[in-house]
Image (tube, rainbow, N blue to C red; front, side, top):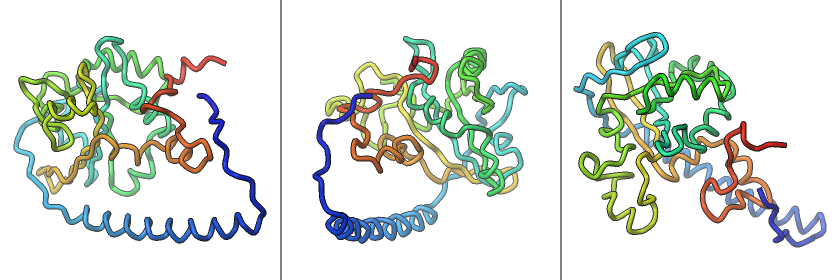
Length: 240
């Protein structure tokens, strides 16, 4: 990652403090707005899942309700697979890296975080071993799951991403012309054996969960990139 040559101006401690207090006022406004938006998000209506999705895990085949592991809520990270490189995407891999271990605190909050990819389980298991992750990767290969939740782009089966036509997003350059997968998160709620879809987010909505980016946003250089993921590498390819 290159270092920006555009540095903040040098000021006295008093000038810095005045500027910091003004910024704090704006940060508090943003926090209150975010809290209000989160409350509104929790009130979104939900849609009952009628399709019998099947997933492949290291422990065998699982239904969608079984992915909850008895918990009430399920957050799915749609883990992108790059066909040309035959490996997971850099950004999704960085997301798993930042989790660090099994998300035990989410489990304590009655919530499961699952990383689901359309790649076959054998490829996911080999990739997970390479990355050294304890977090399992789950395969949705052979099901409509990725298509129904609009993260695998196929002009014949999925014409929408981030609630807009894929063709329009490609025209604006927001989706690469050759992209097969795109990032996303989807949230589900379980009531007994019934499962409901409550929320999905894509594109910049995924940034919230990239802790590396959130920390860099605090620094003078910020993300320091002309395009997303410009400097990001797989953690086994940074070298010294």
